Image (cartoon, rainbow, N blue to C red):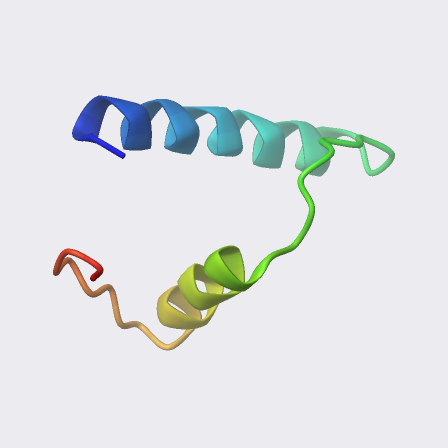
Length: 54
């Protein structure tokens, strides 16, 4: 993905998180996957690796 695509995805996810927080019944349709879990683990560990993934 390019920068613009990443920003659009991030914006969409932030809005989904807001909706989840506002309404516990909100269904965004985002299936958990390995890539997202890697990001969650990095954020929770305080490690944001900004290097390009191979």
